[in-house]
Length: 260
Length: 343
Image (cartoon, rainbow over all chains, first blue to last red; front, side, top):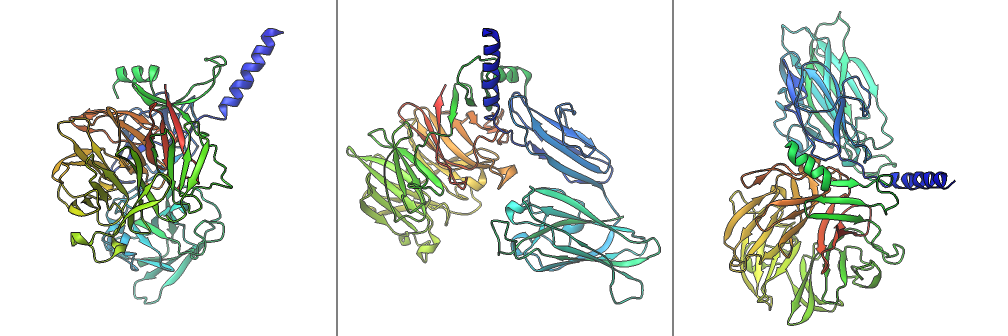
């Protein structure tokens, strides 16, 4: 009887304590770019006794049985690396996601509407410099816009037969950075002066879901032979009522176009 | 990290560890933070203040007076200063005139405690008695020739030398350190923005380091540069103490150690990624409350970062006469200060 009582008491104490575990922070991740030509390498810093960084490549949330980061990870395939810090005495960190893409075809030129002066680092080059995927919008690799719409136009090289356009987009509602309300994809074939609308996508934003870098891809039928491509992004502005910044201008952050 | 040091840290110290119940029987549970001899038990419920009657907004800075009371400065104008005992019982409050209350420094002036408040919104430094009576107001320092109007001056911190000289850092303005005598008369200015070693970027905090009595110096925060910079008491640049990754706030020296709240981790901006550092006489990090303990290459530590979410945006540390720590936090959901007791 006494033994049962003690067992129950310990269980009760343990359950109560479980509510007080600290959450681990996510690790510090360094990667030159999420675009690779042959391969790239991802390095993690996380020095917390009793905790480790687990990762997956198959789109699952990492769990304790998944591989533990031990040395720099070579990356030579398209996919999403997910990783988070875990330890028995802690609540796991939030999951970090790193979508990797192979370098696309060269382009003749890229033009955008005018970015905000704070986030306007070399707008003619930065969207096609082979460097992307940094989650830090202040890193200088992003173009940031608080305008109602954002236009991205790409001049294709004659020898390139494009069938897919991908655009890197950052989402971070805590920093008032939202996915566009919609994106319209246009193309122009040789001899045309008007744009042909290929697709329009709409997006919803109704909660804070964390900082995420996403590749959004648009495809063309194989019968089309475009010489120019265009994306028109519509800002969510004003920020909707569910968000602490409601009524203010939202932001769109983009970096890098890939032509396949 | 070397295996040897990992085992050593894992057994007796950790950046933050929860002590579970079963292995420890029925001992009271606690969260333990820190490394080496500087480990602490975290108490997030220290403040007994009623948020209905004594609300806080940002909790910016804290000091202990000669009666042993703990004073908190908040920018909530219902009660800019909350006065606690060390157990967290609210004893008194005052202040409705400081909408930009940011810096709080206590100075023992010939046996009497006086306070210096930096107000970001008022663009002033205000000297008061311990119960809030205004003794002196320092306006924007036009004597420096660096300012055309008050708006350009956003003081964040003061420190007071033994002779009464007042040093003010303009941490959200032009990053000058402005030195006055005890009457508030301008003496000189130094620091400022630029690319030279002696320049500052976000000069958020300042203190006097007397740990080497033959060479007292000023320690000034250069927060965006993730560093402290040292100067002589007459403003000559000495050297830079790099703390990579750490958005250091105010340096607070107690005994042999410098304590500093780190607002956030450079690699995780705007993500509540703060921690608290304890630094020895040789300016080496010996404990990180809520983060990693760095290895050193020469005088430069590895990048510092948060490893456990013990804090959100810590903004100041107060060390009391029993070496307890009190941590005030900015923009952290109107949370009252936490207390950390040494283990």
